[in-house]
Picture 1 (cartoon, rainbow over the protein chains, first blue to last red):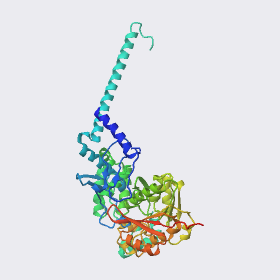
Picture 2 (picture 1 turned 135 degrees about the horizontal axis):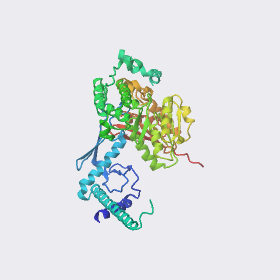
Picture 3 (picture 1 turned 30 degrees about the vertical axis):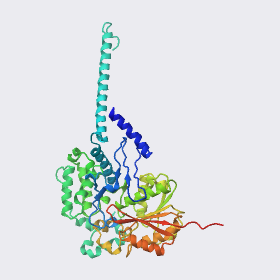
Picture 4 (picture 1 turned 30 degrees about the horizontal axis):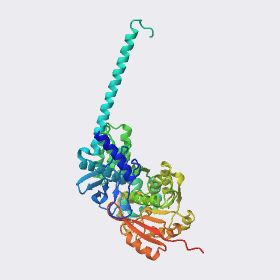
Length: 168
Length: 340
Protein backbone atom coordinates (compact mmCIF):
# COMPACT_ATOMS: atom_id res chain seq x y z
CA UNK A 1 0.00 0.00 0.00
CA UNK A 2 1.28 3.43 -0.90
CA UNK A 3 1.00 4.86 2.59
CA UNK A 4 2.92 2.11 4.43
CA UNK A 5 5.63 2.13 1.77
CA UNK A 6 6.01 5.84 2.31
CA UNK A 7 6.40 5.36 6.07
CA UNK A 8 9.07 2.71 5.53
CA UNK A 9 10.86 4.99 3.14
CA UNK A 10 10.90 7.69 5.77
CA UNK A 11 12.51 5.43 8.36
CA UNK A 12 15.20 4.27 5.98
CA UNK A 13 16.04 7.68 4.60
CA UNK A 14 16.09 9.10 8.13
CA UNK A 15 18.68 6.57 9.27
CA UNK A 16 20.75 7.09 6.13
CA UNK A 17 20.74 10.84 6.45
CA UNK A 18 21.32 11.34 10.11
CA UNK A 19 22.56 8.04 11.49
CA UNK A 20 20.93 8.74 14.81
CA UNK A 21 17.85 7.45 16.49
CA UNK A 22 14.91 9.49 15.28
CA UNK A 23 13.65 9.51 18.85
CA UNK A 24 16.59 11.66 19.90
CA UNK A 25 15.80 15.31 20.12
CA UNK A 26 18.67 17.42 18.88
CA UNK A 27 19.40 20.93 17.91
CA UNK A 28 22.32 20.96 15.53
CA UNK A 29 24.30 24.12 15.05
CA UNK A 30 27.50 23.86 13.02
CA UNK A 31 30.17 26.35 13.93
CA UNK A 32 30.37 27.93 10.48
CA UNK A 33 28.04 30.77 9.73
CA UNK A 34 25.60 30.37 6.88
CA UNK A 35 23.16 27.57 6.45
CA UNK A 36 22.04 26.24 9.78
CA UNK A 37 19.70 23.31 9.89
CA UNK A 38 17.46 22.57 12.80
CA UNK A 39 16.30 19.07 13.52
CA UNK A 40 13.20 19.15 15.58
CA UNK A 41 12.06 15.68 16.51
CA UNK A 42 10.83 15.03 20.00
CA UNK A 43 7.94 12.92 18.73
CA UNK A 44 7.46 9.22 19.28
CA UNK A 45 6.40 8.51 15.72
CA UNK A 46 8.86 8.51 12.90
CA UNK A 47 8.33 11.45 10.69
CA UNK A 48 10.09 12.82 7.70
CA UNK A 49 9.11 16.45 8.11
CA UNK A 50 10.98 19.03 6.06
CA UNK A 51 14.18 20.33 7.58
CA UNK A 52 14.04 23.96 8.62
CA UNK A 53 16.62 26.38 7.34
CA UNK A 54 17.18 29.04 9.99
CA UNK A 55 18.09 31.65 7.40
CA UNK A 56 14.56 31.35 6.02
CA UNK A 57 13.00 32.04 9.39
CA UNK A 58 12.17 35.27 11.13
CA UNK A 59 11.67 35.08 14.84
CA UNK A 60 9.99 37.59 17.09
CA UNK A 61 9.85 37.60 20.81
CA UNK A 62 8.16 40.27 22.86
CA UNK A 63 10.52 41.28 25.64
CA UNK A 64 9.04 44.68 26.30
CA UNK A 65 10.62 47.97 25.30
CA UNK A 66 13.22 47.82 28.06
CA UNK A 67 16.85 46.76 27.74
CA UNK A 68 16.12 43.11 28.48
CA UNK A 69 18.40 40.78 30.39
CA UNK A 70 18.83 41.49 34.10
CA UNK A 71 17.22 44.90 33.72
CA UNK A 72 13.83 43.43 32.89
CA UNK A 73 11.54 41.02 34.66
CA UNK A 74 8.72 40.07 32.36
CA UNK A 75 6.83 36.81 32.13
CA UNK A 76 5.77 37.10 28.50
CA UNK A 77 7.33 34.33 26.47
CA UNK A 78 5.32 34.19 23.29
CA UNK A 79 7.40 33.30 20.25
CA UNK A 80 6.32 34.20 16.74
CA UNK A 81 8.05 32.33 13.94
CA UNK A 82 7.64 33.25 10.29
CA UNK A 83 8.78 31.17 7.34
CA UNK A 84 9.74 33.77 4.78
CA UNK A 85 9.43 31.77 1.54
CA UNK A 86 5.89 30.56 2.26
CA UNK A 87 4.71 33.30 4.61
CA UNK A 88 3.53 30.72 7.12
CA UNK A 89 3.43 32.10 10.67
CA UNK A 90 3.48 30.05 13.85
CA UNK A 91 2.76 31.51 17.25
CA UNK A 92 3.67 29.58 20.38
CA UNK A 93 3.18 30.31 24.06
CA UNK A 94 2.42 26.80 25.23
CA UNK A 95 4.97 26.80 28.05
CA UNK A 96 6.57 29.23 30.49
CA UNK A 97 9.98 28.80 28.88
CA UNK A 98 10.97 30.88 25.87
CA UNK A 99 13.50 28.25 24.85
CA UNK A 100 10.91 25.47 24.83
CA UNK A 101 8.39 27.66 22.99
CA UNK A 102 11.00 28.34 20.32
CA UNK A 103 11.61 24.64 19.87
CA UNK A 104 7.89 23.86 19.82
CA UNK A 105 7.26 26.63 17.32
CA UNK A 106 9.80 24.99 15.03
CA UNK A 107 8.15 21.61 15.42
CA UNK A 108 4.80 23.09 14.52
CA UNK A 109 6.37 24.95 11.60
CA UNK A 110 7.80 21.71 10.24
CA UNK A 111 4.34 20.12 10.39
CA UNK A 112 2.76 23.08 8.62
CA UNK A 113 5.46 23.11 5.97
CA UNK A 114 4.95 19.42 5.45
CA UNK A 115 1.26 19.96 4.71
CA UNK A 116 2.03 22.94 2.54
CA UNK A 117 4.66 21.14 0.47
CA UNK A 118 3.27 17.69 0.17
CA UNK A 119 -0.44 18.27 0.15
CA UNK A 120 -2.18 14.91 0.21
CA UNK A 121 1.08 13.06 0.67
CA UNK A 122 2.06 15.10 3.74
CA UNK A 123 3.04 13.09 6.79
CA UNK A 124 0.38 14.74 8.90
CA UNK A 125 -2.43 13.63 6.62
CA UNK A 126 -0.87 10.22 6.05
CA UNK A 127 -0.70 9.65 9.80
CA UNK A 128 -4.29 10.78 10.16
CA UNK A 129 -5.52 8.36 7.52
CA UNK A 130 -3.45 5.54 9.00
CA UNK A 131 -4.94 6.23 12.40
CA UNK A 132 -8.48 6.11 10.99
CA UNK A 133 -7.64 2.87 9.20
CA UNK A 134 -6.19 1.33 12.36
CA UNK A 135 -9.34 2.21 14.28
CA UNK A 136 -11.51 0.62 11.58
CA UNK A 137 -9.46 -2.58 11.65
CA UNK A 138 -9.63 -2.66 15.44
CA UNK A 139 -13.38 -2.19 15.48
CA UNK A 140 -13.77 -4.97 12.96
CA UNK A 141 -11.69 -7.31 15.12
CA UNK A 142 -13.66 -6.45 18.23
CA UNK A 143 -16.92 -7.16 16.44
CA UNK A 144 -15.58 -10.45 15.11
CA UNK A 145 -14.55 -11.48 18.62
CA UNK A 146 -17.92 -10.58 20.03
CA UNK A 147 -19.57 -12.59 17.28
CA UNK A 148 -17.34 -15.59 17.98
CA UNK A 149 -18.08 -15.46 21.70
CA UNK A 150 -21.79 -15.22 20.99
CA UNK A 151 -21.69 -18.29 18.77
CA UNK A 152 -19.65 -20.21 21.36
CA UNK A 153 -22.19 -19.39 24.05
CA UNK A 154 -25.08 -20.46 21.86
CA UNK A 155 -23.32 -23.73 21.11
CA UNK A 156 -22.79 -24.36 24.84
CA UNK A 157 -26.44 -23.74 25.60
CA UNK A 158 -27.47 -26.09 22.78
CA UNK A 159 -25.21 -28.84 24.26
CA UNK A 160 -26.54 -28.60 27.81
CA UNK A 161 -30.22 -28.38 26.92
CA UNK A 162 -31.24 -32.04 26.64
CA UNK A 163 -29.50 -33.27 29.86
CA UNK A 164 -30.69 -30.40 32.00
CA UNK A 165 -28.36 -28.15 33.99
CA UNK A 166 -25.69 -30.06 35.83
CA UNK A 167 -23.81 -27.00 36.95
CA UNK A 168 -25.35 -24.09 38.68
CA UNK B 1 10.08 36.38 53.40
CA UNK B 2 9.82 40.09 54.13
CA UNK B 3 12.47 39.81 56.80
CA UNK B 4 14.89 38.32 54.32
CA UNK B 5 14.54 41.24 51.96
CA UNK B 6 14.89 43.79 54.75
CA UNK B 7 18.09 42.18 56.00
CA UNK B 8 19.87 43.28 52.84
CA UNK B 9 20.19 46.94 53.77
CA UNK B 10 21.03 47.99 50.25
CA UNK B 11 17.53 46.99 49.23
CA UNK B 12 16.35 50.40 50.41
CA UNK B 13 18.64 52.38 48.15
CA UNK B 14 16.34 52.70 45.21
CA UNK B 15 13.42 53.81 47.34
CA UNK B 16 14.79 56.67 49.43
CA UNK B 17 14.10 59.10 46.66
CA UNK B 18 10.58 57.81 46.50
CA UNK B 19 9.67 59.56 49.75
CA UNK B 20 6.63 58.05 51.36
CA UNK B 21 6.74 55.26 48.81
CA UNK B 22 9.65 53.91 50.86
CA UNK B 23 7.03 52.61 53.25
CA UNK B 24 6.98 49.22 51.71
CA UNK B 25 7.72 46.03 53.57
CA UNK B 26 4.98 45.41 56.09
CA UNK B 27 3.54 48.86 55.56
CA UNK B 28 3.54 48.36 51.84
CA UNK B 29 1.47 45.28 52.21
CA UNK B 30 -1.13 47.15 54.24
CA UNK B 31 -0.98 50.16 51.98
CA UNK B 32 -2.10 48.05 49.00
CA UNK B 33 -5.84 48.06 49.42
CA UNK B 34 -6.60 44.45 48.62
CA UNK B 35 -10.09 43.77 47.28
CA UNK B 36 -12.46 41.87 49.54
CA UNK B 37 -13.17 38.21 48.94
CA UNK B 38 -16.18 37.63 46.71
CA UNK B 39 -19.47 37.02 48.48
CA UNK B 40 -20.56 34.21 46.21
CA UNK B 41 -18.73 31.66 44.09
CA UNK B 42 -16.60 32.49 41.12
CA UNK B 43 -15.12 30.47 38.30
CA UNK B 44 -11.48 30.51 37.28
CA UNK B 45 -12.34 32.49 34.16
CA UNK B 46 -14.20 35.08 36.19
CA UNK B 47 -11.27 35.28 38.59
CA UNK B 48 -8.85 35.92 35.71
CA UNK B 49 -11.08 38.71 34.51
CA UNK B 50 -11.54 40.19 37.98
CA UNK B 51 -7.86 40.22 38.86
CA UNK B 52 -6.78 41.47 35.44
CA UNK B 53 -8.91 44.53 36.10
CA UNK B 54 -7.55 44.87 39.64
CA UNK B 55 -3.97 44.80 38.39
CA UNK B 56 -4.75 47.24 35.60
CA UNK B 57 -6.32 49.60 38.08
CA UNK B 58 -3.22 49.60 40.27
CA UNK B 59 -0.74 49.92 37.42
CA UNK B 60 0.67 46.43 37.88
CA UNK B 61 2.61 45.40 34.77
CA UNK B 62 1.44 42.44 32.67
CA UNK B 63 -1.98 42.49 34.36
CA UNK B 64 -3.59 39.74 32.31
CA UNK B 65 -0.53 37.49 32.13
CA UNK B 66 0.01 37.77 35.88
CA UNK B 67 -3.59 36.83 36.53
CA UNK B 68 -3.48 33.86 34.16
CA UNK B 69 -0.23 32.45 35.53
CA UNK B 70 -1.37 32.69 39.14
CA UNK B 71 -4.71 31.04 38.49
CA UNK B 72 -3.16 28.32 36.34
CA UNK B 73 -0.72 27.61 39.18
CA UNK B 74 -3.57 27.44 41.66
CA UNK B 75 -5.30 24.85 39.49
CA UNK B 76 -2.14 22.78 39.21
CA UNK B 77 -1.11 23.79 35.71
CA UNK B 78 1.70 25.79 34.16
CA UNK B 79 -0.46 27.74 31.73
CA UNK B 80 -4.14 28.55 31.40
CA UNK B 81 -4.04 27.15 27.87
CA UNK B 82 -3.29 23.68 29.17
CA UNK B 83 -6.45 23.58 31.27
CA UNK B 84 -9.75 22.23 30.00
CA UNK B 85 -12.37 24.85 29.29
CA UNK B 86 -14.67 22.80 31.53
CA UNK B 87 -12.35 23.19 34.51
CA UNK B 88 -12.10 26.94 33.96
CA UNK B 89 -15.88 27.27 34.09
CA UNK B 90 -16.26 25.35 37.35
CA UNK B 91 -16.67 27.25 40.57
CA UNK B 92 -13.58 27.58 42.70
CA UNK B 93 -13.84 26.16 46.21
CA UNK B 94 -13.70 28.44 49.21
CA UNK B 95 -10.13 27.35 49.94
CA UNK B 96 -9.07 27.92 46.34
CA UNK B 97 -10.61 31.38 46.36
CA UNK B 98 -8.88 32.25 49.64
CA UNK B 99 -5.54 31.10 48.31
CA UNK B 100 -6.08 32.94 45.05
CA UNK B 101 -6.82 36.17 46.89
CA UNK B 102 -3.68 35.77 48.97
CA UNK B 103 -1.50 35.16 45.91
CA UNK B 104 -2.96 37.95 43.82
CA UNK B 105 -2.73 40.41 46.70
CA UNK B 106 0.99 39.75 46.77
CA UNK B 107 1.14 40.57 43.08
CA UNK B 108 -0.60 43.86 43.87
CA UNK B 109 2.48 44.86 45.82
CA UNK B 110 4.48 44.28 42.59
CA UNK B 111 5.99 41.04 43.79
CA UNK B 112 7.15 39.21 40.66
CA UNK B 113 4.83 36.38 39.59
CA UNK B 114 7.75 33.99 39.92
CA UNK B 115 8.02 34.78 43.64
CA UNK B 116 4.25 34.78 44.14
CA UNK B 117 3.91 31.22 42.88
CA UNK B 118 7.32 30.20 44.18
CA UNK B 119 8.46 28.62 40.95
CA UNK B 120 9.34 29.31 37.32
CA UNK B 121 10.43 27.41 34.26
CA UNK B 122 13.90 27.50 32.80
CA UNK B 123 14.32 25.39 29.67
CA UNK B 124 12.76 22.06 30.54
CA UNK B 125 13.08 22.55 34.31
CA UNK B 126 10.66 23.94 36.84
CA UNK B 127 12.78 25.63 39.48
CA UNK B 128 11.89 26.83 42.95
CA UNK B 129 11.96 30.60 43.29
CA UNK B 130 12.31 32.56 46.51
CA UNK B 131 13.02 36.23 47.16
CA UNK B 132 15.51 37.80 47.09
CA UNK B 133 17.33 35.19 44.99
CA UNK B 134 17.65 36.42 41.41
CA UNK B 135 15.03 35.12 38.99
CA UNK B 136 16.50 33.53 35.85
CA UNK B 137 15.84 35.54 32.70
CA UNK B 138 14.88 33.97 29.34
CA UNK B 139 18.09 35.25 27.75
CA UNK B 140 20.08 32.96 30.00
CA UNK B 141 18.35 29.90 28.51
CA UNK B 142 20.29 30.64 25.38
CA UNK B 143 23.55 30.86 27.30
CA UNK B 144 22.99 27.29 28.45
CA UNK B 145 22.27 26.22 24.87
CA UNK B 146 25.58 27.72 23.70
CA UNK B 147 27.58 26.10 26.50
CA UNK B 148 25.89 22.73 25.96
CA UNK B 149 26.66 22.66 22.27
CA UNK B 150 30.34 23.35 22.91
CA UNK B 151 30.59 20.94 25.84
CA UNK B 152 29.05 18.14 23.80
CA UNK B 153 31.38 18.81 20.93
CA UNK B 154 34.58 19.29 22.88
CA UNK B 155 34.61 17.47 26.16
CA UNK B 156 31.82 14.96 26.23
CA UNK B 157 31.89 13.09 29.47
CA UNK B 158 33.78 13.72 32.68
CA UNK B 159 34.28 17.45 32.35
CA UNK B 160 33.88 19.92 35.21
CA UNK B 161 32.17 23.27 34.95
CA UNK B 162 32.45 26.26 37.26
CA UNK B 163 29.54 28.66 37.59
CA UNK B 164 30.05 32.03 39.23
CA UNK B 165 26.94 33.66 40.65
CA UNK B 166 24.58 30.68 40.48
CA UNK B 167 21.48 32.37 41.95
CA UNK B 168 18.70 29.76 41.86
CA UNK B 169 21.03 27.26 40.17
CA UNK B 170 19.36 27.52 36.77
CA UNK B 171 22.53 27.26 34.68
CA UNK B 172 24.29 24.55 36.67
CA UNK B 173 21.25 22.34 37.21
CA UNK B 174 20.34 22.68 33.54
CA UNK B 175 23.81 21.64 32.39
CA UNK B 176 24.02 18.76 34.84
CA UNK B 177 20.58 17.50 33.85
CA UNK B 178 21.50 17.55 30.15
CA UNK B 179 24.93 15.97 30.56
CA UNK B 180 24.85 12.99 32.95
CA UNK B 181 28.66 12.78 33.11
CA UNK B 182 29.22 16.43 33.92
CA UNK B 183 30.31 17.72 37.32
CA UNK B 184 29.99 21.28 38.52
CA UNK B 185 31.05 23.81 41.10
CA UNK B 186 28.63 26.67 41.73
CA UNK B 187 29.40 29.78 43.73
CA UNK B 188 27.36 32.68 45.01
CA UNK B 189 28.07 35.51 47.44
CA UNK B 190 24.56 35.03 48.86
CA UNK B 191 23.91 32.19 51.29
CA UNK B 192 20.26 32.29 50.27
CA UNK B 193 21.26 31.65 46.67
CA UNK B 194 23.50 28.79 47.77
CA UNK B 195 20.59 27.25 49.69
CA UNK B 196 18.17 27.61 46.80
CA UNK B 197 20.64 26.17 44.30
CA UNK B 198 21.06 23.13 46.53
CA UNK B 199 17.27 22.70 46.72
CA UNK B 200 16.89 22.87 42.96
CA UNK B 201 19.78 20.47 42.44
CA UNK B 202 18.08 18.04 44.81
CA UNK B 203 14.80 18.45 42.99
CA UNK B 204 16.45 17.24 39.80
CA UNK B 205 18.65 14.61 41.36
CA UNK B 206 21.94 16.21 40.35
CA UNK B 207 23.13 17.10 43.85
CA UNK B 208 25.82 14.40 43.84
CA UNK B 209 27.56 16.05 40.91
CA UNK B 210 27.27 19.61 42.18
CA UNK B 211 29.20 21.40 44.89
CA UNK B 212 27.76 24.76 45.92
CA UNK B 213 29.80 27.27 47.93
CA UNK B 214 29.12 30.63 49.49
CA UNK B 215 32.01 32.59 48.00
CA UNK B 216 32.32 36.19 46.85
CA UNK B 217 34.78 36.08 43.93
CA UNK B 218 35.59 39.77 44.29
CA UNK B 219 36.31 39.75 48.01
CA UNK B 220 37.63 36.23 48.37
CA UNK B 221 39.42 35.13 45.22
CA UNK B 222 41.70 32.82 47.18
CA UNK B 223 38.76 30.75 48.35
CA UNK B 224 37.84 30.16 44.72
CA UNK B 225 41.37 29.31 43.65
CA UNK B 226 41.76 26.85 46.48
CA UNK B 227 38.48 25.18 45.69
CA UNK B 228 38.53 23.52 42.36
CA UNK B 229 41.34 22.14 40.28
CA UNK B 230 41.14 22.76 36.59
CA UNK B 231 37.71 23.27 35.07
CA UNK B 232 36.90 22.86 31.42
CA UNK B 233 34.42 25.69 31.31
CA UNK B 234 33.70 28.80 33.34
CA UNK B 235 30.16 30.09 32.92
CA UNK B 236 28.52 33.11 34.48
CA UNK B 237 25.57 35.43 34.41
CA UNK B 238 27.25 37.92 36.75
CA UNK B 239 25.71 41.17 38.01
CA UNK B 240 26.21 43.40 34.94
CA UNK B 241 23.94 46.39 35.33
CA UNK B 242 25.45 49.86 35.50
CA UNK B 243 24.96 51.34 38.99
CA UNK B 244 23.24 54.41 37.59
CA UNK B 245 20.67 52.21 35.81
CA UNK B 246 19.66 50.54 39.06
CA UNK B 247 17.39 53.44 39.94
CA UNK B 248 15.30 53.05 36.79
CA UNK B 249 14.49 49.41 37.41
CA UNK B 250 10.86 48.31 37.66
CA UNK B 251 9.51 47.80 41.21
CA UNK B 252 9.40 44.04 40.71
CA UNK B 253 13.17 44.02 40.56
CA UNK B 254 14.02 46.92 42.86
CA UNK B 255 11.83 45.86 45.74
CA UNK B 256 12.27 42.13 45.67
CA UNK B 257 15.47 40.93 43.99
CA UNK B 258 18.94 40.99 45.55
CA UNK B 259 20.65 44.17 44.28
CA UNK B 260 24.02 42.50 44.69
CA UNK B 261 22.94 40.08 41.95
CA UNK B 262 22.36 42.99 39.58
CA UNK B 263 24.72 45.88 40.28
CA UNK B 264 27.99 45.52 38.39
CA UNK B 265 29.41 48.86 39.42
CA UNK B 266 29.93 52.10 37.53
CA UNK B 267 30.47 50.43 34.18
CA UNK B 268 28.79 47.16 35.11
CA UNK B 269 32.11 45.34 34.77
CA UNK B 270 33.27 44.91 38.38
CA UNK B 271 32.46 41.23 38.72
CA UNK B 272 33.12 40.46 35.05
CA UNK B 273 36.65 41.83 35.24
CA UNK B 274 37.34 39.83 38.37
CA UNK B 275 36.10 36.64 36.70
CA UNK B 276 38.31 37.27 33.66
CA UNK B 277 41.28 38.03 35.92
CA UNK B 278 40.88 34.70 37.68
CA UNK B 279 40.02 32.68 34.57
CA UNK B 280 43.61 32.01 33.32
CA UNK B 281 44.39 30.50 36.71
CA UNK B 282 41.41 28.15 36.66
CA UNK B 283 41.16 27.14 33.04
CA UNK B 284 43.41 24.68 31.24
CA UNK B 285 44.70 25.39 27.77
CA UNK B 286 41.69 25.83 25.44
CA UNK B 287 39.35 26.15 28.39
CA UNK B 288 36.52 28.59 27.77
CA UNK B 289 34.64 31.37 29.52
CA UNK B 290 30.99 32.04 28.70
CA UNK B 291 29.45 35.23 30.01
CA UNK B 292 26.09 36.90 29.82
CA UNK B 293 26.57 40.67 29.73
CA UNK B 294 25.00 44.05 29.10
CA UNK B 295 24.65 44.85 25.35
CA UNK B 296 27.22 47.63 25.74
CA UNK B 297 29.88 45.33 27.19
CA UNK B 298 31.28 43.18 24.33
CA UNK B 299 33.56 45.87 22.80
CA UNK B 300 34.59 47.03 26.29
CA UNK B 301 35.47 43.51 27.33
CA UNK B 302 37.33 42.86 24.10
CA UNK B 303 39.37 45.96 24.68
CA UNK B 304 40.08 45.15 28.31
CA UNK B 305 41.16 41.60 27.51
CA UNK B 306 43.72 42.85 24.98
CA UNK B 307 45.51 44.76 27.72
CA UNK B 308 44.72 42.74 30.81
CA UNK B 309 43.55 39.33 29.73
CA UNK B 310 46.94 37.62 29.93
CA UNK B 311 46.42 34.31 28.12
CA UNK B 312 42.71 34.91 27.55
CA UNK B 313 41.66 35.45 23.97
CA UNK B 314 38.35 36.96 22.92
CA UNK B 315 36.61 34.48 20.63
CA UNK B 316 33.19 35.82 19.75
CA UNK B 317 30.06 37.73 20.68
CA UNK B 318 26.63 36.15 20.32
CA UNK B 319 23.30 37.89 20.24
CA UNK B 320 20.20 37.01 22.19
CA UNK B 321 16.78 36.29 20.75
CA UNK B 322 16.04 40.02 20.59
CA UNK B 323 19.17 40.63 18.55
CA UNK B 324 21.08 42.36 21.34
CA UNK B 325 24.77 41.49 21.83
CA UNK B 326 24.47 39.39 24.95
CA UNK B 327 27.06 36.61 25.25
CA UNK B 328 30.85 36.76 25.27
CA UNK B 329 32.98 33.72 24.62
CA UNK B 330 36.66 33.74 25.54
CA UNK B 331 39.30 31.06 25.46
CA UNK B 332 42.47 30.45 27.44
CA UNK B 333 45.39 30.07 25.10
CA UNK B 334 48.07 28.79 27.42
CA UNK B 335 49.90 25.82 25.98
CA UNK B 336 52.24 24.02 28.37
CA UNK B 337 55.89 25.10 28.00
CA UNK B 338 58.10 22.58 26.23
CA UNK B 339 59.80 20.15 28.56
CA UNK B 340 63.33 19.12 27.83
